[in-house]
Image 1 (cartoon, rainbow, N blue to C red):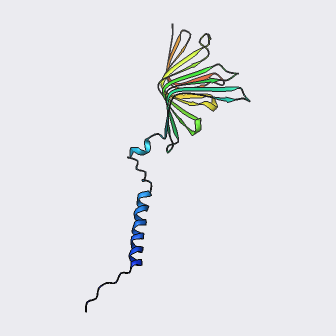
Image 2 (image 1 turned 60 degrees about the vertical axis):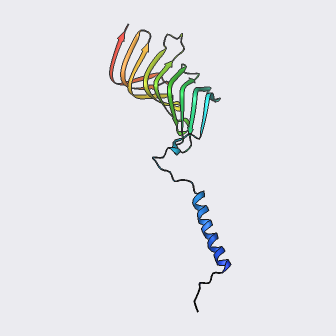
Image 3 (image 1 turned 90 degrees about the horizontal axis):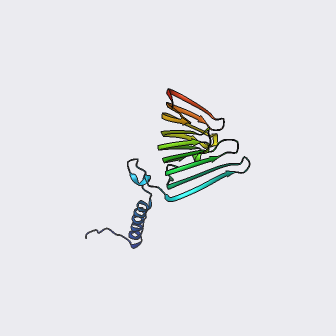
Length: 187
């Protein structure tokens, strides 16, 4: 007499159910983050030709922005803007306008990094105290009304052109601090 293994229908069904459960578990797991994988560097949304406004009614401060394109990255908590303009209207201070090819916004708008053909103008176009600066990088802290850079910067006021490396500009008190390699030309 030969002995054959005995398999009951419930046992076979139970084994198939376990294998199916394990297979579905593997299929439904989200892929692991891999720093070299570009799938996690894709924006979760893109907006084109946008503008916005933020108003603090108590202090009368108004901030406006516009951009050709906005890319938001949820995993990095970063917003990137292309061809962007910022305008800060503060009743006690001159108008402040900024333009950059790119901007990266972090910490819910508390830190803004402007890059590529950055220009800032303090004062209206017809203002004799109008100051214009240009650089390739500017760190903007809108709540503090402060801009900084550690790069080469050119400042123009009336007939005076100033070149420097590094700058801290407080629009609230109108103070510009040039950090190094300062030279000025008066035309």
